[in-house]
Image (cartoon, rainbow, N blue to C red):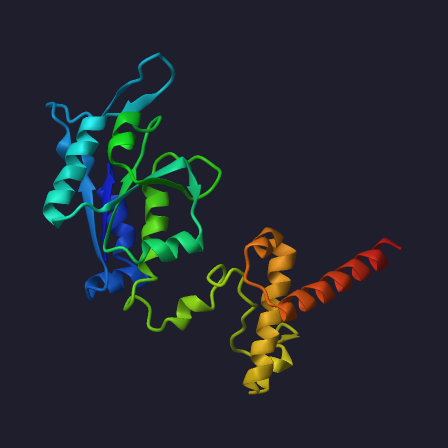
Length: 253
């Protein structure tokens, strides 16, 4: 997979993309990144990429032409029309499901917005979708773009050492991940659950599933509406809910 990022701060993006798991994957060629300085496509001597908004209002707006020229250059260089994403608080909130879908593509381009946003005409003409990383506003699109690039890249074959690295994580299967523990067995008087020390794989998997359901019910119950639950899962959830209700009643007495 190749990910192109259109940004005013390519050095900021490169600093992140060269580190950790993604940096190692980049070095071995499992995923390719290219950060494009938008000012290189500005057509005036001052390299301006923004201007005042028609109709008045505070702030500046990113101009359409530099973005269009940069995207067209990327298309020509890559020999294809990549999927074009604009990181925007107006977009659909990023989900693991959408990440899996994007990871199937060969090439995506991510546009990092700034100021008061981007001229609507370039969005209408070129952008395939707008994506948000949450219901809040940041000073620029670089951090959201890096979140998207990281989350998509780690789904690409060869980036992680084993598919199980992401298949058992929170959100991948529609539930939050179960609690995890490492050495030492006892830490400040607290021990690892005995089932994890038993070596009984079936019991461990059963415990992990129950814990995932508990974590999701108590922390992100909204996810259960979209999760793929079987009758056994629903029974476990009913039992957990009953225990929580009983505990709350006792606490209020």
